[in-house]
Length: 229
Image 1 (tube, rainbow, N blue to C red):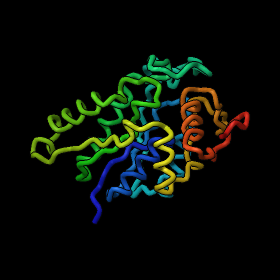
Image 2: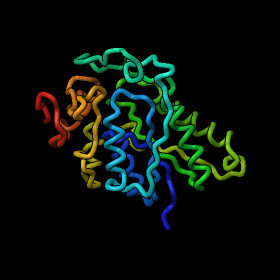
Image 3: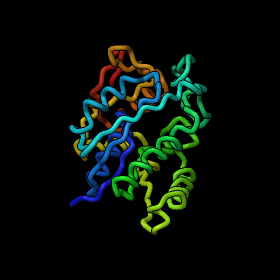
Image 4: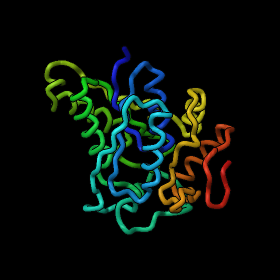
């Protein structure tokens, strides 16, 4: 029987690739998504429809209303930046403490189901400069997980897997394709249309398009202005 692993799964390119990697590494993936009041809720609807197709053994959606705090273009009435240079400056699309919150829920579910492995699709190369995507954060959370849980205290050590952390978007696309990922079942846009068309101009769309272009592959999703590469 495969070992269980909790996989943070948003329905985006990185998390979907991460789910496929967990499965390829012999784990039974328990996918965990969040309805946190995000602007790009279409991503979540796609995750609900696609989780089992992508390989999740079980999929749960947790509701947390981070709009109560706001502070981000994804959880407040703030415009999503478009066509800006993607660099390491922390943008307004950063959601305060989001990965800390998500990993904490993943840790709780993992302890309940007897899983000691948690996968998260963070990336520290082609990314928007979010502080909770850095290797230092992942290492610190893993240390905390083994201090703050009964399972950790009883020496059943938790491992936080971040297999995409040092990969470019092109590397991620290539790896996903090699694992049979259907990227037509994913959405990355921060500001999609109500019909689910990607804007093509937010940070996430720019990084996604760059990744497919550099990987020599065609992005199968639809964009407002038809700029899929």
